[in-house]
Length: 219
Image (cartoon, rainbow, N blue to C red):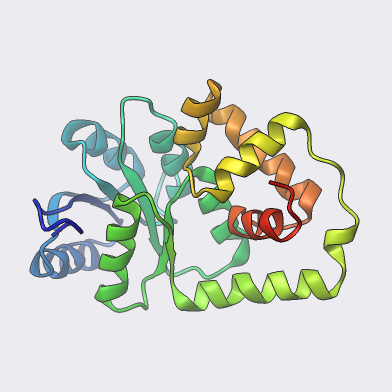
């Protein structure tokens, strides 16, 4: 059920492993989540998102054909869709986490996590908030600590006024689609600005960028 006690949250599951996909669907339904579609690849996820208009798409990272990263970018960049994306994967690689978040994913949950974490990720994403698995969060914060110890925050290229605007909205937890709508630019332009911000701030993902921005009083 949603956080206000209303109708059940509606989700689409995209995963190329049928037993895992159907098992997860069953567990989510037991937890009160309405699984409106369960599909084997990213292209089918895009079609299901357009057809069913779910609250959240639970997306595997690596699938045949279009990747979960690309599908996430397409979903979050589609003005006709209001759903959020929760990445559900076996990969705890920092580069995968970064790419997923830059693409617009609201959360990142490992498949080793209990179903309660998946439900928490779905509920957070539907509410416009972010959720990551504890092990992933540990990696992110370790990276932040390493960067701070190395003094990486001291030598950065100044952000442009537009990049500061984008970073301020990132720090508010806005999705790429929301940032695009706020600034009247395309989601691909938003992704370009975020990539530039990550390089200039010498951080790996938008979570680190937001923390850096607040600590350094950039925004």
